[in-house]
Length: 143
Image (cartoon, rainbow, N blue to C red):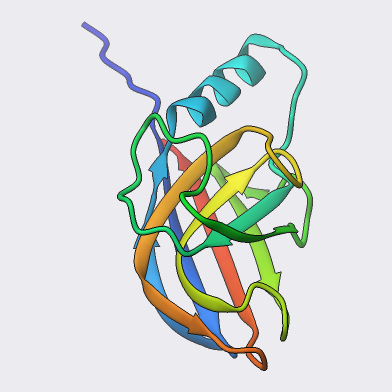
């Protein structure tokens, strides 16, 4: 009997002023799984174009459709991410003065506001001061 499963997993690395401060796994939420299924079925592709950060602390759940307390959302370095084999990498950057605060959550989205959320994670606080730069590299693996 053939038993093959398709799985989506994600992990992200957060850097503050060029130094890695967090390596975190994430949750691919139900809306994200539906988005991927629609693409596989041949539906109109809606690429992941934005990453958001926030200060919410409620644990990520499959039913999430937004961040708990979004602070800022920026366009990705490469809209739709960069694929290498079965891994798609997304990079978001918050320059000095942008997305400042005690960041504790992040998510990937299909739009600059609203849109479909693919993934969400909650993490120990990363304090981003007004003069700091935060870069998040988020890898989503299909296995």
